[in-house]
Length: 267
Ligand SMILES: [Fe+2]
Ligand SMILES: [Fe+2]
Image 1 (cartoon, rainbow, N blue to C red):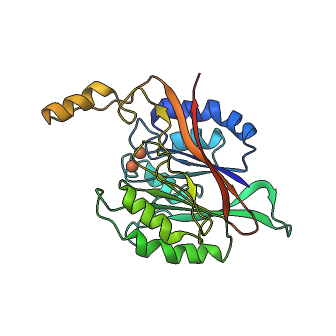
Image 2 (cartoon, rainbow, N blue to C red):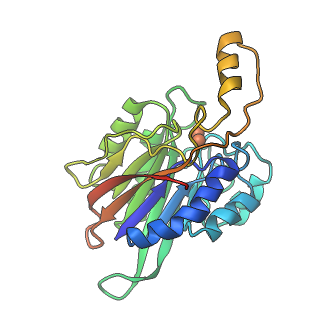
């Protein structure tokens, strides 16, 4: 089966890119399932039920998140009641929402006639990021639990440091189908299949305006670095690109046998 993962959707331009490009990508790659990181989908900061609904309507099956989770207070509604929304697993016990989920693939059955199920896990790194529970300790038992239900497991590891991302994915090699990184908004070129059959990419990149600094207007960001004074970072508008990766997975074993980066410009 083929899963498309879409890197951080930034603001209205990002949502527009998903809406317009996803139907074409679904057809071109014969996609079975689509996961997208939505942590910047509301004006670049956080996610709301409205922006999530737009992303789901565009054809995304599951939305993951990250450190921008709390930017919009309306996210509480998603955490309370949206089963297709996954937040980082390694927040303290008692945090609303879910850090993983099991999702049936539409119109697909496994070889034995039972529904084909994908497990999705979202976790957040700790290096150069806010303090949070240790993902290296919290995630493996969750993977073990999910593996009782399905071997097809996709992990969005939302983290800054490439060393943390690679070490985390190496730890999970053979236990999950794919570990794809998010958060830096810069797509890396290190896609590969580890020896145990886990597909890996350090960062999927971001979906939104690329004539920017990570999706924001360029000048205020430069000014911030030059003066150290706070600035308003508005979402930019030009050269809208959808970034992500397509992972091909053997449904019987859950092992990946292909990973290809996606970079699709909105005409
Ligand atoms: Fe982001
Ligand atoms: Fe982030």
